[in-house]
Image (cartoon, rainbow, N blue to C red; front, side, top):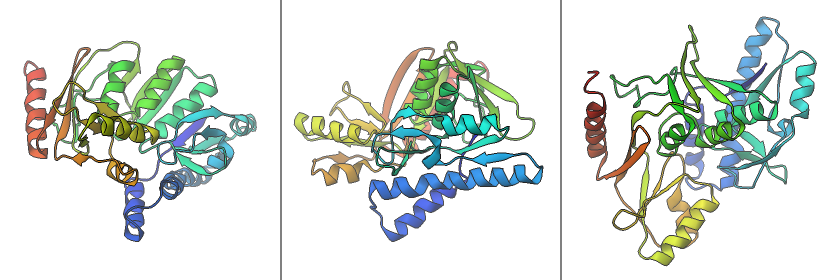
Length: 320
């Protein structure tokens, strides 16, 4: 068995607060060197639990894991993987425990696959070990039509196709990382989403079929406008160079660029590069309707919440 473990709840966020208390704008290498180590805590806590029941296990951290990336420290892109340490440990009859989101670059420095990237690690391992199914266990049993923590009437979806899952992820939904889904699609790996506590029930399968209706309001989205096309082109390149998740809204007045998925600081990147821009107070809402994707910019958080609620009600009024 190979198990990829995330950080204990809120630990990564608390470490980020601790880091900000020292320096609000640390280098990307500093952030990427510290925050993924929160997942190491989760891995060793699982190892301790297995010790208690005499199950042999080994934690394999980034320096031994064999996942190599580029040198974008906080949103690194995997380039290759060597599963020697994982295979050797499995051949010895031990459970392999891997901290999620960790890798190293060509210089041996720690890199981070991004916030909420444990599933990227899991599917990378599944792909390189020849698995056809990867189980993802979290605090919800699957993918919903909206965030079930804020929408009491959110609908659990039994199946969702890779394409719709990717759209939801890049739009800011707190589901699977879009790179993980892209890799699963490329390798033909079905993703079985389960609850991470008893009864561990399966809620959603991500695979080839399943067009959905869903509402994705991204309260953490950052909407950026550039003063001219030259600044826009240079700004897009700078943000892409840091592997940020972007929505390029070319058909909207002022052609804004939206940075989604939170936890990044595009303003810091653009300021460092001396690229002029304005970050607006707008937030992005994405609507999926059985293969059709529509995006709306809302002027405030309250407007975002209101439009998301009314849109969800329209989708599911027959059920309600």
